[in-house]
Length: 354
Image: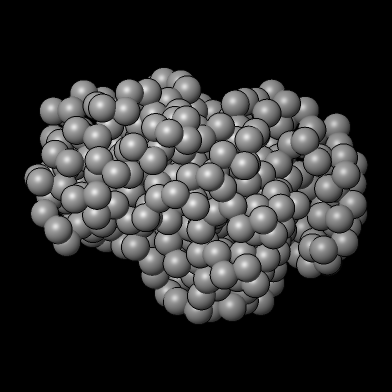
């Protein structure tokens, strides 16, 4: 089998509900889709969701890298030899993880289609569905409570609130959301690097009665020691997100016992193959893993879902980046019912095509 035809194109999707986080306001997103066609008529699909702040990429740089670097290396190769292909591309794309993730997805999609099996079964098949949290961006307290009530009414059992701009407002939001949704709903909080160590500790102390499940990336990503100080001082698990961009980051964080959990996003780390290695490091270190996402199409969410379903150590999911996207060409790549994500029964990533 050989790859004979490659196409890459950008697609902009507006958000039905724009949102704000600690460092930006988001109204729309542009994903780059990739198709790899073989001489046997099998087509694998991948998707990059670049974020200039997080991955250092834009849709233009992704398209440029795919056309200038990836296409010459991919054409004529056997797509089933994933490790060989990805190893050849890693050095050239080391600063473009979302680009690499799109290629990784498309290759894994072909693998599943050749085997006539959903990818999650090929990768391990530990579970067949997973609960996902849904995120509430930075909005006024009243709107936060309103959105929390609406998501719970739709069946979601886990809510993640964004913050990091104002400690006292964040505390008020968390306490009022807990009061509104009751004790059975899981609550998580993401500060998106917005706090100091002292503010992180104060936030956890003042929200104790809300029984938060975890706090995500409270301090700046470039200073992992600050995360370690928070972890050693607070009573709830601390999760690294922006501080974890690679396998080496996972090793450094785990070796020094700086965190309790890691958020693995395929766009940050370069795809499923790398995510599996990071998960192995986390498991060896006794760290729990959450699979997260950017503003991603259903196809990219499907890739994260298949990774999560394959391994027992991926105990948490935050795969809601597709929910607010309008005109998603890969809508239907995953199945969502009352806050629980399931794959389709189709082979590979489960999406038939565009």
